[in-house]
Amino acid sequence: MIRKRIPVTVTALLALLLVGMTSCEDWLDIKPESEIILDEYWQTESDVQAVLSACYRGLTEDDVLYRMIVWGEVRSDEIISGTSIDYDIYQLISGNITSSNEYCEWGSFYTVINYCNVLMYYAPMVLERDDNFTQNDLNRITSEALAIRSLCYFYLVRAFKDVPWIEEPSLSDTQDYEMPKDSGEVIIRHLIDDLNTAKEYAVSDFGVKSKNKGYFTKSAVNALLADVYLWSQNYDSCVVCCDEVLADTKLSLVENKNMYSQLYYFGNSTESIFELQFDEDVQENNATYNLYGCSDDPYGQLCYPMTLAYDEETNTVGEFCPFVYLASSAVTESEDDIRSKDFMQLYGGVYYIFKYAGIQRTENTLGESTYRYRSTTPNWIVYRLPDVMLMKAEALVQLGGETNNTSALKLVNQTYLRANANADSLDISTYSTKAKMEELVLRERQRELMFEGKRWFDLMRIAIREQSVATLNTYIEHKSSGSSSSLGAPVLDAMYMPIAKEELESNSQMVQNPYYEDTNSSTR
Image 1 (cartoon, helix red, strand yellow):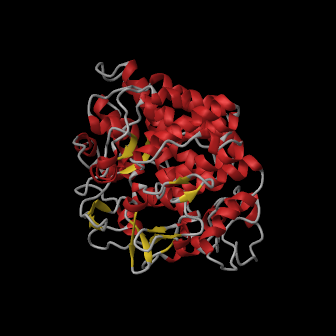
Image 2: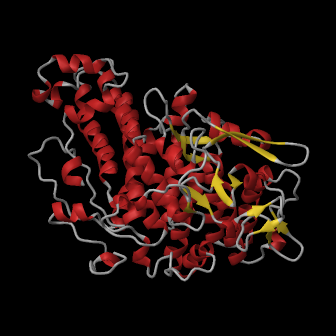
């Protein structure tokens, strides 16, 4: 809830700042913890950097990463219930979405937002107190804070549509934290302005790989801005931002044979653009452990539907499988796609998610796969090169025209051929209409980015573009396998989450999202 989670005094930041931050020891020496005043902390460049680190660290908190995955995946066509699933996640998968569901709570994102607001409020004061802290340092740190805050708001807009826009820091319990919602369209405009500012001052290279992947570089800002432009249907600007990312010579696709291990086991690969950094000595990635699996418990809470899967052993293709897909009478896509093997494992008649859960898959001479699960904590990739390639492809298809379609297909072929080493390039003659190109790009995004927190948002973009939930529901119902239950969205407003019951009770200015206003309904 905003009311309870926004205030950030020194005490509220300690849990994050004390991890490896020796400057906090001096902070605590000033006066008893209960009397510490924020102004007294901001003395040196290291103090500013410590709070920036806290902003990044906030993104790795369980409550945040669980929601990144749940909001972006669980309601999509590619997720069904797995082993010992959490009750509230099961309710979302089942289409029973109520305001008492814990994933309607947004406080963890507003906590990170407020860390950024506090940083941007106090950091300029350090210019006068520390001669080693320059205007360039302040510009770079502000750029990163704006990008982190924008990422949080972008998740909130996609999950809830209209949310409170707060850019002033909340510093004490005496402030009024009851805030009304702002429209999603207004917030998107704020994000575009902020990200363009961030882009102006972002650095291209921090000189250290973990920082180049774990901090907001210029390419990371551009990737996020491209995503925001794509969401708002500003396709020309999306293409421009994508092109800037694609021009970054430090980024390149990992080759086929190393794709799984480099991307999801080792992490910080050559194609990673922005990746949340985890270290089991400090903060474990519990979200992927529990939702996808690990060596201690290989079979996670989320699984992939049989109706969308391909079983090599029996040569059985699910009715709606994006692999071994008959694109025309003469063209079958993804007949030997490494992703259909690397990203999931068939066990006991269920397809469990292997992406992020494993070390590697090995294959013997008979084509039988062995899966090794990880005991170390994985990073979480927010943006990587194929995502940007396929965002650009989607934007080009929407812009239309033969030249744009041809360019879009070339981008699709880059990720497609990487995963289908012995396949021929897909040819434009097979995808001669806008509708076929739209479906191809969506299909390739699913094959490449499945379980990375993208799919539900991809389907939402279609519904917003078409101003209809018909196409979205067609995809969602694919996983129901003949069930009479409705798992999609009856209307556009139902794509979003309801506002949490506690938020409504504590904030007199908050109103429920339109579809969920009828509190007597069993689905609200």
